[in-house]
Amino acid sequence: MIRKYSLLILLVIAGLTACKDEDFGPVLQPGNAPAFINPADGSSFELLEDNADEVMTMFVWSEADFGFQAAVTYEVEMDVAGNDFNDAVTLGSTSGDTLAVSVSKVNNILLAKGLPGETPASVEVRVVASVSPEVAPLVSDAIALTITPYTVVINYPQLQVPGSYQGWDPSNNNTVIWSVKSDDKYEGYIYFPDPNTEFKYTLGPSWDTNWGDDGADGTLEPDGANIVAGDAGVYKLNVDLNALTHAYVKTDWGLIGSATPNGWDSDQDMTYDPDTGIWSITLDLVAGEIKFRANDDWAINLGDNDANKSLEYDGANIQIDEDGNYTIELILNVPKYTYEITKN
Image (tube, rainbow, N blue to C red; front, top):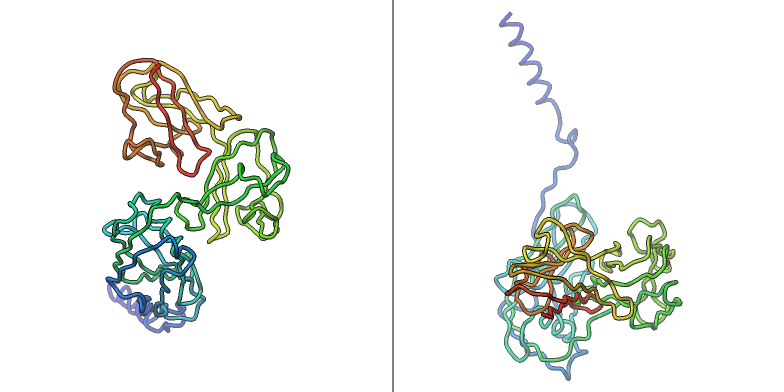
């Protein structure tokens, strides 16, 4: 019996060793990640408003080698030094090995990150090469740059949102969404007063460049079909022009926290005013903490990381120092979301 099992094991081993490598398909053997050629690590740039439309620098890198022939997409990312690219902004995307970035774009990105003008900022830049979601990207070593921005009122890039709710007017600057990081990713909250509102996105106040969604599948196509919302209400709109994707969700906002009558168990519903575009609530609070959240769920919530009246998704709890009756306003019809707390 032992000899019989030994023979069976030998046959299995022989069968496995007889298989050729090609039976398992090609083995991926990625080569070199991209590497920066320009600018040099440690370079410094002083940005000037007079040169806003000029190129700050031409980023140049070596090609990535994935070990097989493929169309490679390169994204140049920038973040504050020491942040490990946890809040990276995409400066641009290309299939080539160069990318020109304007002075105004870099300046807006730095100011949007809260970095002060006229003060040197330490940042890091890297190149991410991708061929497929199924293949791990190749990432360059980061280079360190020192960039001094200039103080200016930020004009955030915007997408127009013409639709049946506003007369299909792409020149209406009251119905837009913004790219706060100047990275071709846009977001905003827009009120649709009627159910089944139809809308599209345009780049600028005309129909020359516009996108719709032919298959209602979240993918944008130039001159595509109208996008159709559901019930009337305030919708959170997101567009990524890098990937040509979009998403929208109806939101109803509430206040929650240890300072509210129901604590962290359930929301206190806020009321939306279509004329002002502001959510508000007046109620009695006790000393404690509050946050804003949408649709009685934590998937979309806003807090204040720096206690500066500027809101961030999943941000820190907001302190209420003493008991009293308060009116609280949530302002989402602006590029950077804010709030006001008034003790009555």
